[in-house]
Image (cartoon, rainbow, N blue to C red; front, side, top):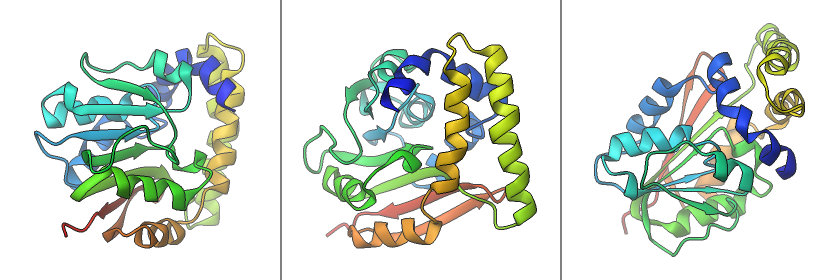
Length: 224
């Protein structure tokens, strides 16, 4: 899958914006603020992709050089559209290429369902954060209603790939969009995410939900 992400990176942001796939820049911005991101804080955006969350983080902290994006896909890193000064690194959530206690805030936007080892990833978040540092993980989760799940599945498996096929420059982009539904359907449930954050040593764990599908998980590393 890393290969298909790299090959379709040139299309990802355009399709995402057209379909409001990740719920839009306004939601990302608000979720970061609600999770405690403030001016002057240093940020690591894990699974930076094309830079949608990292760009909002840079706007909030007021200095792009305080933001670092990490992604396992070379194509995504190359295609990232971020403000000048944002540092981009190759790496995974399970092995962040950063020193201990080096960041004030860690964000992850719609990449949790691609993580292979939740415990290892949250352990890395805890390691890289300074005492008192905060986490914000945004993800699409399955609606509680069976009708809503069926509607979302139709949208994600049929409509989004159809539109992507007409907008994309790469032939694999519609397949990537279909894959996204599979990862949403298989994503670990919210209770498991919250439990994993607590097991990694985080406190003040919380999940905020918009429209029944957009989840923002928040947590904090103890100050002492």
